[in-house]
Amino acid sequence: MAASAETSISRFLSYFAHARGKRNTVFALELARRYTNEGIVSISLNPGNIRSDLTRYIPRVGQSYCVQHGALTQLYAGTTAEGAELNGKYLIPWARVGTPLAGTQDPELGRALWSWLEEQLVTCDPCDSLAEMFGFDSSTFHDCFGLGHVDEAHR
Image (cartoon, rainbow, N blue to C red; front, side):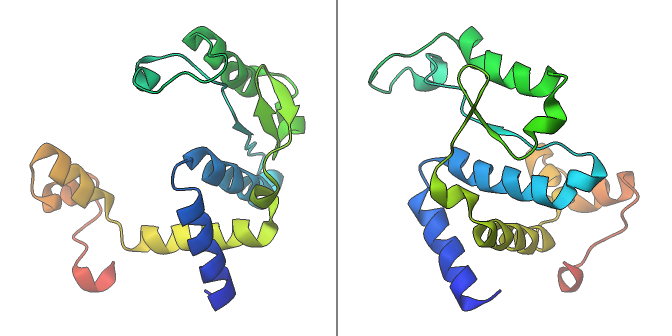
């Protein structure tokens, strides 16, 4: 990865460490750019300020809505007949096309994030994660899924 792209992605990841949704917006737009011709629709969204158990300890600033309202935009994105027209768009409450932060629309940043994610996947063995979660040896999962054994040199 080029130094400027690496710096750019590093700055982006640290700046938005508190808001995964911003990275999701970059990723969703890049996914839309890459796979539009494959018929894959990628939409990012902001569900709104939702009152739930996840936010019970966060001081309320402004209006917050019930979880049913929070589901509306997501349900719309996943079920509307106009889904293909929303590819690469950012939806805001309640099921409206909005304008995401300017930095999230940078194609160079999208490519850099995509490259970084690909690099992370190269070193990730899902069987190791499953084995750790369930307390098994990772070879059990490799055998079960017909993956053979992946040694350190080939990750």
